[in-house]
Image (cartoon, rainbow, N blue to C red; front, side, top):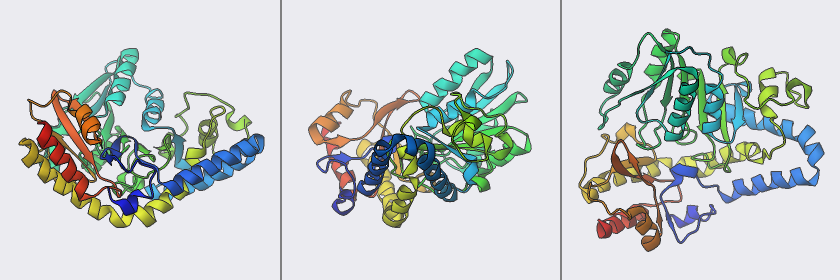
Length: 379
């Protein structure tokens, strides 16, 4: 661990934490502000819920919208991208036989959500194969676009994939879809504070991002961007007070979504602090994190003696996934944790087992070396 930066986080310094990508890690200054908001809530719950909350949400939306490149009345907070995308899914007015096109790299929970919804509506979920190793942007676009048919009504695509940790070059796909009048829903769970993001420049219809991952906000802080032209038909799955409640905003869209019954929204209110922490303490060191990932990319090949799923470079940010040998130890994840105190995900994707490394500012090159040494002893 990078002790200087590690001291700013609440992580156990005795473990080698190489799994920031799953749930993130909240720094001490951000966590303190999170708890301060909770204390304000408990000090005077009625005043907080009817007055203080909405000023705080507006300030938080303003900070986040500037950070991700959209207007403050185009984003709403959700606890995670899964609930955000689910809310969009169940607003889509599609007919039996209509198609939703996605890649075969999409996040499993959302693939399951789309398929369950497809069973109810008769819409078909098309998972287009994006082969590995990934090579060029043109090949990516060619492979994905082969899945398009006259029945395609929606494109759902990751900006950074979860299992394979690849940065998909999605800009041209979004533009091509817009020209054909196809809705685009982008899963950017891993994007905010990981790679640069400007939603307006990207031009998609919907975009979701997690703020508790690379932005290091408290758990349960994510957002959904909804382009203004869609705000009149996107409705919350939980119907509450809306315009009859205490929300002073003139936006019916925000009124409908922001209050969904009593809940603790303190995590949402920490976004200005999390963004400030990122700009001061994380962004200056991201290039160093990316160098460590490129080092890990190389070390995984020599240690595991298996081929990578990308040429590295611009396909990777602060994560890298790599296939494990076919004769891997079946208890590898458990042994890495119990015997070496290394927290890292090992999972199956596309009938192959993978290991995925995440590098945040509290990590160091030594963490990668420790992992490689442990892998050599276990494989």
